[in-house]
Image (cartoon, rainbow, N blue to C red; front, side, top):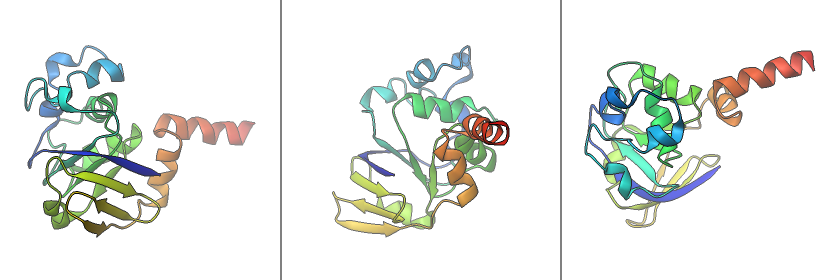
Length: 167
């Protein structure tokens, strides 16, 4: 899979309440949640996002409560991928379970700036920053996690497994 988009950079320790504030948790509809993505960080933040844009974060992105609405809101905002220094563990798992791939690249994330234009080749393990003319390498997503992503998340993965067993 190849992703291309403009970078929307956020800081460190962005918690799930910043990603999707509790007052918007009256639905699980991705589009409705996406309309309020990052509203706890900055009202109307999502209005700058175009489908396919890429979210880039500092350390410990997704900390706080374990709401699965947070990765759903990111996907609903049209952001198909998050690149970060590091992720809170429960957010990491919730993201993959909902079909949102995360790339944890450590200190290399500091080279990516807000507004940069990225091309991310998941199979090649390569991030190309066209704005700065740099290339960053990352390890592949573990096969078990990629299998979940390939089915659009954990629900799709389980359905496919059950269908294969009983089909």
